[in-house]
Length: 266
Image 1 (cartoon, rainbow, N blue to C red):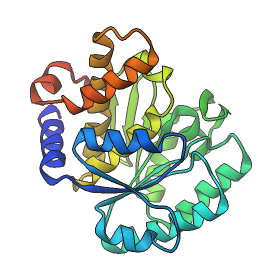
Image 2: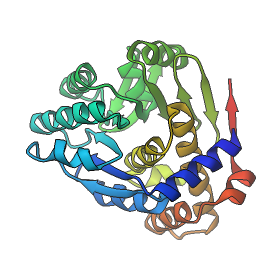
Image 3: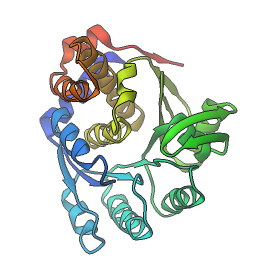
Image 4: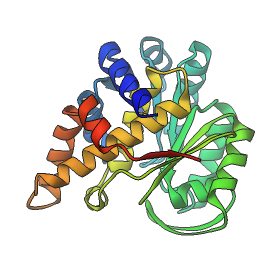
């Protein structure tokens, strides 16, 4: 799997895919910058009058419901349907699903109208989405009851999608396979936006790959390795760590991936 991760990173950096984001205003700048550091190009456009036209020139679409409103969902569906018609991968980050009934309802509305290639979220968000009992505190994960792997695998099969679950260990699950990724660092939870940045990275990898499970594994592994390397710079606090994280994503290469990647297929 490690050679495939390296190959996918090289594809991203050679192709410089344009990633169209309809995302939240809390982390929009972070998403734009992390897209650049991994090797893609970001564009942020959410007005319903232009999203389909913007998607026409993009290579992938990232949808993030962090700062949700009904008009934004209309734009997401319009852009998503255009992406589907063009064969562009769609990544959905159901931020805070389960925190309110509106969030859960709107995520399901998007899924009913758009074919989503990768769904990425924390354990509680994915748990809620696949029908388990879970608690969500705002946009932070709480407890989950039930078998997340089986629930995610069944949901992935039903929706013909790949699910990326972020946490202490990341999981990438489709209807047939599960990968466990043990890279990452606790400091990644000390800054806002790492989940959103992860969605952007997945968008770049999905744009450069025909295999969504491999793309998601590559994206999560690379981001996790960068998180570990950033901590090794001994930053004095979370904001310095965030800068180091960006720099370490930029500095990723084959040698670092070979040395640090911790991926297991089940």
